[in-house]
Length: 81
Image 1 (cartoon, rainbow, N blue to C red):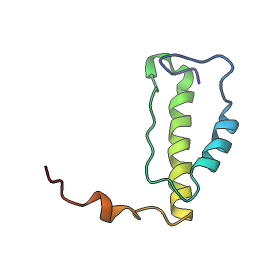
Image 2 (cartoon, one colour):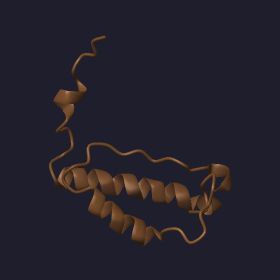
Image 3 (tube, rainbow, N blue to C red):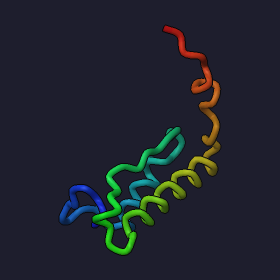
């Protein structure tokens, strides 16, 4: 993607990345983080828009597999030191 801190020549095409995301977001995912989006390098906001698309696809997959909110009981436990 062009709008990253270090663009990688010959990297994944958006359709290839979404295909990989479909494999990764099967039943086990409980969270997602988008990193390396740099607006000053982002020509016509294409990287930012693709980042949004990835988040929407991941959330949709989590809803479809019934994983959204499934880990709430683990996350909400109080922290003890």
